[in-house]
Image (cartoon, rainbow, N blue to C red; front, side, top):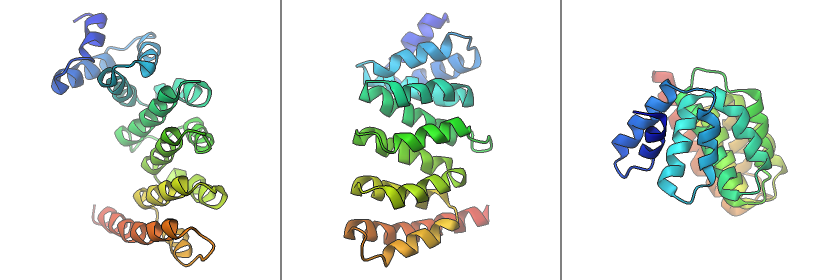
Length: 203
């Protein structure tokens, strides 16, 4: 299949065909593949856009610089949110590859994005990165006054499986100055975190 037809296939209603096209684009990519996938991130076709996010995630760390650039500088909320989601995909797809510091810094800045879609996607991506993002998440919890961000950070800390998060979450459950919803979230996140840690220990 030609490159153009592979890109067309990313819009296909059949998820298996979309997946196959993503894999082929990733395996046979050239210098135009990443820019072309990036250009789809503001497309109105949700299926097409999500396929581009997944394909950028499959490519891995080479996608990080353009994703961070658009995450921080695009005027389009959909593009910024898609960039954060693609960075999360990279962390999921390549758990054994160190996540680039440029990606971590970009996501840290995006926690303060004015749009909830973007800042929550950025926090979730940091949760997928795991331990390397621990300090950023712990810091965000101290500095944010946005309840939605705080709750997202609490949940992201739980998914990192990092034992240092136990102390942070425990402190939050007894912090009277914290929002009650954030405290409740910290309580349920604690038990989830302990499950993740136990699961990792058994692997």
